Image 1 (tube, rainbow, N blue to C red):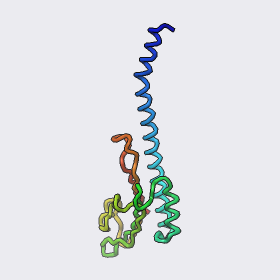
Image 2 (cartoon, helix red, strand yellow; image 1 turned 30 degrees about the horizontal axis):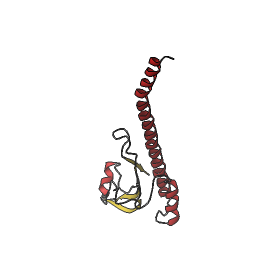
Image 3 (cartoon, rainbow, N blue to C red; image 1 turned 30 degrees about the vertical axis):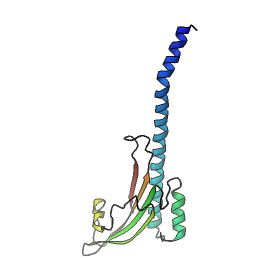
Image 4 (tube, one colour; image 1 turned 180 degrees about the vertical axis):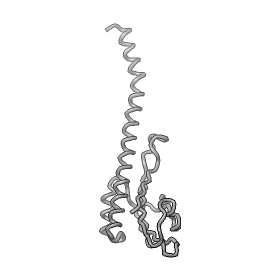
Length: 160
């Protein structure tokens, strides 16, 4: 290989390497964001299933089950995730009322969509008089490595 050809190869590598490294970093960041999205969805379904089964979510055993389902999401008071489970009932007179709310994880960083206002449930579903619904909201932090591509926050909501 001549010196000129070797110089061209080095130059090609110098141009291509940063692009390849950035692309590889983007793939890793995107896959980490997708993994957290899947985990948040699984956590949301687990909490909805527990509420639908009538489990007492204030029981420490239930909290441990949710913490196990939230592995990798930092479901702690200062972590990057939170779960809000709220049961809303519409009375026969048409008024909405929150029967109970359970919150897990970082409640200072994340807020429920209802925020104590039961009538806001109409943003998700319109209940008939006498009906009730359980709204489960899961929030998690995402990787900030790719702003604009991977959202900084993951929100998953389920109605049961």
